[in-house]
Structure formats: C-alpha cells, structure tokens
Amino acid sequence: MTESESKPEIKKGLKNVYIDKTKSSFIDGKEGKLIYRGYNIHDLASKATFEEIVYLLVNGTLPSQTELKQIDSELRSNRKINKEIFSVIESMKSSHPMDVLRTCMSMLAASDFNSDDISVENAKRIGFRITSVLPTIVATHHRIRNGQEPIEPNDQLTHAENFLYMLSGKIPDSRDAKLIDKDLILHAEHGVNASSFAARVAASTRADFYSCMTAAIATLKGPLHGGAAEGVMKMTLAIGSEENASDYVAKVRESGGRVMGFGHAVYRALDPRAVHLKDEAKALGERLGQPKWFSILEAVTKVMEPYERRGLYPNVDFWAGAVYYLLEIPEDLFIPLFAMGRIPGWTIHIIEQYESKGILRPRLYYDGPMDLEYKSVDER
Image (tube, rainbow, N blue to C red; front, side, top):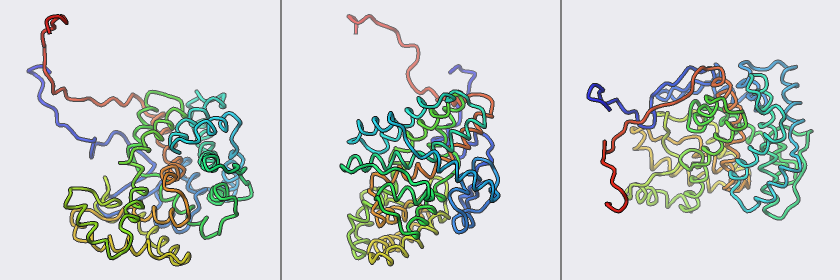
C-alpha cells in the first residue's frame, strides 16, 4: 500500500455487502420474511409441491398444468445412474456421503457431451438433470455401504416418494413423503449463502455448470453451513430428556459454546421456515409414538427465550434434524438431503452469474511486513 492509499473498510465475511442483483429470492432478516421469485414461503410450503418450486426457481413463474406435467416427466426420466457412476459409488462406499456427492458431480460431467455449453437453456437442462439424479446417488450409496442391494428409481412416484422408496425399499407413507417434499421446498433457495456464493464465484469464471455445482456441494459440507441439522440431533440425543435441557444449555453457554440450531447469519427474527418444520416435527413425533424428541427441543427453546433479544431464534435446521431422525434417515444424510433441496436455488444463481459480466474478485488488505531484505540460506 502506498502513502496515498487510505486503509480500506474491511467487511468481515462480506457481511451486508451486495455483490449484484437477483430475482431468485428476497430475505428480510428483521421481519423474518422469505420470498421465492415473488411468492411468500408460507404459501409455497403449505400449498406447493417441490416439482412446482423447481420450475418456479429456474424459470421464474409458477408452472401451468401442462408445464408442471412436463417438468415432472423430465425429473422422473432422469433418475437413473450409469454404470460409471455406480462404480464410483461402490469404490467410495466407506466415504462420507457428501464426498460421494462431490465426486459423482464431477463424474456426471463426463457423461454429458454438452457439459461445456453455458447457455441458459443448457444450464437449465443440467440443473433439472442434477435435481433428478442426486437422490439416486445418495440412496444408492447408503444401501451399498450397508451391504444392501441398490433400488432402481420408480418413475411412478413423486420426487420425495421416490427418494424414501430408494432408501428403504418400501413405498412410503404419503404423509412422510409430503413432509420430505415440504422440507425440500424450505431448503430450495436462500440468497447468496456460502454455497451459492461459491457456485457464483465458479460461474463468474465461466466454469462449466458441473464445476459450479461441485463448488457448491464442497462448500455445503462445511459444518458452519450445512451441518446444523446434524448438530441439533446430536445435541438432542446428548440431552436425553426435557428435564436436562436447562442444565445442558447453561453448561454450553458458560463454556462459550454455541447451542446448535439457534441464530442465523441473516435472520434477527424467527426463521419463517422453522415455523413449518416445528409443527411437522410435533405431528410426526405424536403419530409415531415418539413425542420425546420434540419435547426436548421445545424445552431447549424455552430455556433460550431470554436470548431472543440478541436475535437467537430457532432456525430451520433446529426442527429438521428431529424430522429426519424420526423418519429413520441417518445423521450423515442430513446434509445430502439439504443439497437435494438446494439444487434449484444453485441453478438460478449459476444462470444469473453466467448472465452477469465480469469475474468475482474481491480484495484482501495486506497486513504483513514490507520490503524485507532477502538473505541467502546460509545467512539465515
């Protein structure tokens, strides 16, 4: 830095820095409001299907009946994996599911002769393909690592139904499938979070679509981004009963630790997505005769109420972990399930970045020594 340059203002974590415009989603952190393409998340979560949300986010409008049939048909027809992907999954059966997803995402490019085409239409095609095939990769790996035969996708089932079917081999209860469908909707898009930003950085270099998706998946694996639901369930198991909630929270707070599932990088009010999963977690626990887990989480929220003035409200992942656990989805599949829902959101971010000019290239302020004298190795 020269004498004529002033010290720049540093925005740690790029907090409240706007890098571009978007039509994907709107978040009001103070009011606790979330909008997808103009539609309130409360309406979408209670009335729409995930297939509708896929179309909405990628194309910008809710589909007509004909358009919905077309996108549904496209998703159903792209579920199968080829033998090369299957071989990769077999070779990685002992790996973390997110490592398998990241590797398979790169492999998907090898079977796509138009992978380098970054036109909007081709990006949409690939986005739909990945949305469709990702659940098959997750379910196939899960069954192989447990010594079970993989289950072929069933094109007679919805997106959510088919995923649960491929995991267990049983046609799921319609209520369970609807719950997973709602969860996918709630996780479909959420602004320029870490993984979406990673996808945009890759897209700004004009990297192919699969590379951008690989960057997003790699970023999502980080526990500060995608691991909250898994952390909440581990916390719940550690607490054991609602009577222990107060002591557990007190010990965590006293040690300077973080109570998992509380607070959000954007929201300073209640996460609007959490409302839907809280009600679903309670109903599911009661239906399955396992109200214990909801009671523990509810007790934790009561203990944490004094911290709401600091913006520490339950977020969407606080209740998601209990839902997944009650549906017998293993803890290390929580993040892949997040990824399954987020593909449409990543798709529109990649497309928007392709359409934007210039590369994303922030700067770092150098804070180290200057003009040191080089000395040969025998003088050091």
